[in-house]
Structure formats: C-alpha cells, structure tokens
Length: 256
Image 1 (cartoon, rainbow, N blue to C red):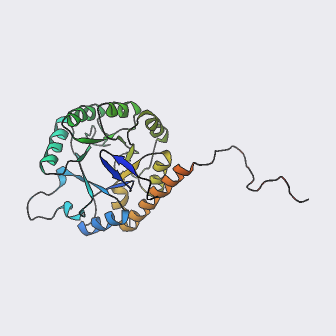
Image 2 (cartoon, helix red, strand yellow):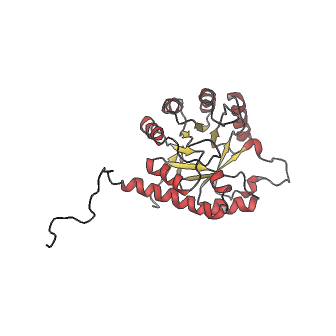
Image 3 (cartoon, rainbow, N blue to C red):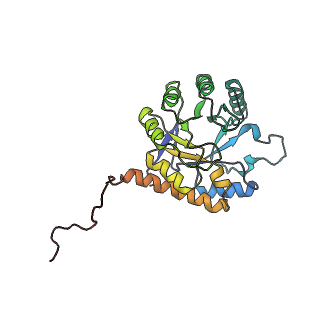
C-alpha cells in the first residue's frame, strides 16, 4: 500500500488518517497516539491553543515534519472563522485550514450557509480550505465550486461516536464532487473508519474516537488498521450482495 497515495492541495499523503489533539490526558499521551496512528496531518483548534511564550501547549505534542491543520472550532459566524484563519497565517501555520462554522451549540452541526460564505473569502485570500459540512451533496458541491481543496462531511454529531449514520448521503457526495471527501466527526471505533474507507472516501478525520477510548494508544493503532483495511477492501471490490445462499464450493462435478 506504500504506493496508494492521495493528494491534497500541493501535498501528497500516504496515511489516510487525520487526527486531532484534544481530550488527551496530557501532551505525552497525545504525542504517542499521533505516532501510533501513523497520521501525517494533525488538526488543532486554534482558539484553544495556549500561545503564551513558555507555557505548555498542545503544539508541543506535534512532532516535527507533520502537517499542521489549524481549525476554526468554536466559531459561530463566517467573520469569526475568517479572522481565526488569518491569525493562523500570521502564526505561520496556515498552509491548510479546517473551516468550521457551527450553527447549533447543542448538536454542533455546521452552518452550511456561513461555511460557504467563509470559504469564498478564504479561497480568494489563497488559503487551502477543508470545510466541515453536513452530509449534504448540494452544500458539498457548492464548496467545491468556490474552490475548496476537499469537503469534510460529518458522519454523526461531533464526539458522538455513532459512526456513519447516513452512508447513502456519503455515496451521493462521492458521486457529486471530484475533490477528496474526508469523513469528519462521529467515528467511534475502527469499524466506523473502515466503513468510511469502503465507501470510497479519501481519508477520515477523528479525535474523540481515539482520545476518549479506554486505551487511547491501542485505539490509535486500531484506527490506523481500520482505515487501511477499509481502503484495501474498497480497492479490492466487494462481492455482489445476494438474497439467497450460494455454495462456496461448485456443485458441478461432485462425486456421487
């Protein structure tokens, strides 16, 4: 699988797992989980990062050489999200930005209208934008049309661990856009990650599914293998589903 790469902007990646840095017990656990996951891209909530000189920061857990994906978690308007991305650029960490504009504090569902408005501004300013969006094929197509480098539909509410609630919509999104589709939010275990990859998604982004596991380090490894298994199954092509049994061994030529 070393040759099974995917492209995002001007970058080429081998790992199809992107992970977050929140909710770990400390930076050491976060650092080891990132290593065990094999992820090459790590996302951080910029508005929750300690930026004061000399104080511990989640950025300390991110090894040199990994691609940093600052995100706009906690933003409830296009203006707030755009300002946060500009701050990331000023800090030298905005090659890619994960655009989140939340529309509802209870479900943390994204506001698609505000997300599209922010994406237009950010793309025009030269950002490589990865927007978090509902599993809506129309919204995803609009985000592709304004120049986003990928679309990131949710599988389920953020942090819920419910897995992919609507695989049919994910399939429709995959048919609707040409940019990479990255499932974001709701993945709870390795089989959820495998399902996303079996559908044909380019990658999976997760945080709570690893950080909130009883053993986060073991789950980080499990997620790595789940993504790989799902990708291999997609490339292999599953057998057709059938309504009735079909003997594994051919009946022709049986000895009476």
